[in-house]
Length: 165
Image 1: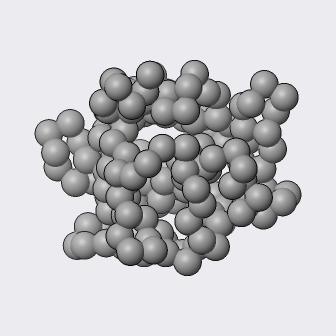
Image 2: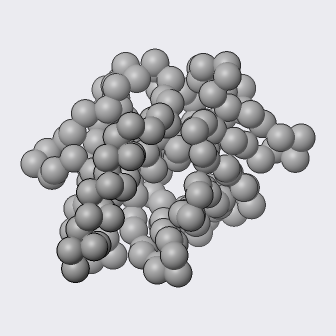
């Protein structure tokens, strides 16, 4: 038990020192209209978790709300003017914030990618994308893709099947 706590503490410390996933200074045009409801399947070291995510416009900000399958909120963040801030009484969730930043990039329309810093991303010839520091995005369709980082992946699909087709 103590080794797990120590491992978690070291992971959090290293995560704080590592580069954060970039976001643009203003909300980019997305590949789908808001609100967007997504099913997220997180896999790490063989362990799988299912989450639900709702992305909504709130004035010029984007509200990101992550829930477990029972509807219990796990994270709520607002992205406004390129800055994340907590929304509500939930404690900060660094993993969710990094996931939200990677999802924003994955959902950004092709012609809006220029809103990101030039050296922070790449688009491969086959349309797949990479975002610094470690994200790889593999698309099946605009709302059906996999986000992958070292030892971690998220399968992302539209919650409403009609949105994903």
